[in-house]
Length: 216
Image (cartoon, rainbow, N blue to C red; front, side):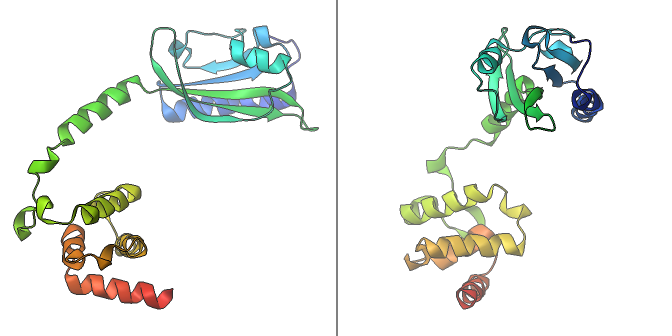
């Protein structure tokens, strides 16, 4: 570690502790002084994730970037693995001095391994055999609806990223707008099908369409 740490880096040390405290033991936060890349770590929290400590080096990739003058841009939200195979979600943020010269970086490594296990378990629990799926109470069956319409609706719902039960009116209007732009309502039965999927009446869909087309 350098004896005389740049004041900007010194002032970043509480940030290291604050981020780690906020996101917990699965979040390693590391502050590097790139003027000494082989002994660059000047602050670290949750070091058990990578096993590094104060005075440790930067990664070989970043050392090469510094040597080549390429250590200039932030790297955000990428994944990498530890030597023992654990998955990390990482970001490297370049810290600059008053003249915009890179002097260090803040690295955040969030261990995803156990969350990936949970995600896979949830996906397995939620999985269904699509050809056997029906829409229940209304009597609609996926096999009786035009495949193009089903795909359009499913793709639009997926793009919004939330279950219908959690959608606001604005969300539903946006879905209807996207479907209208894609020509979904030119397909026979689309109004009734979309109404059932969004848990509203067919007259509500007509109202949404009137609202959208007037505003356009």
